[in-house]
Image (cartoon, rainbow, N blue to C red; front, side, top):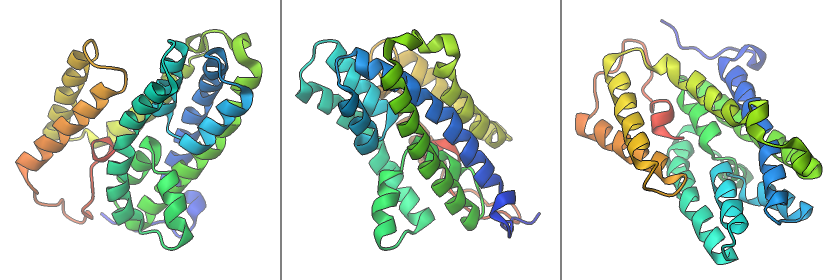
Length: 244
C-alpha cells in the first residue's frame, strides 16, 4: 500500500482533516468570547487572551477562576498548568514539522491539541506537515474570529450547549481517533485512558484528568516498547495519544 503524498494539496486528506477540525474548534470560540465577557473581562481583554494565550483549555480555566472570584495570579497559574501539555506536544511536533527560521516561532504558537492531532494522524511526512499547518493556522484564524463574535454578542447567545458548540470539538477529535482503533491494543489503551479520565474527573480540577490519561497512555506505550512496523507504513506517533 502506497503512502505517497498527493501532488496537489487540494486533494490532501490532511488538509481536509485540518480544515474540518478548524471549523469545529473555531465555532467553540463563540462560547469562549461570550463566557469571558460574562466573567468580567472587557472586549479587548477577551480578544487579547485568545490571540496571545491561544490554547482553549487554558483560556477557559483562566476565565473560570476569574468568574469564581479568584485572583489574577491564581487564574494565570491554572492556565499555565494546563498549558504544559503544549510544551510536550512541541517536542514531537518539532521533529515532525521541522520548521526553520521565523516559522519556528509561528509553529510554537500554533502547537495545540488540534494541530498535533491532525499531524499525528498521518503517516507521510508531507501529510504530517500539511495537517499541522492547516489545523494550527485554521484554528488560530477561526478561533479568534469567533471569539470576537462571541464577545460582541455576549449573553445574547445563552447556554452554548443549546447550539451544540460544546460537542463540536469533541466530535472532531473522535473523528480523528476512530480510524486508529483498528487493532485490539489501541482499543485497550483507549478504554483504559477513558476509565482513568472518568475516575479522576470528580477529584481533579478541570483539564487535569486528560493530562493524567495522557501520562497513562505514554506509560503503556513505553512499557510495550517499539513493535514491528506494518508493511509499507512509515513509522510515526499515534493519533491523539501522541498529543491532544
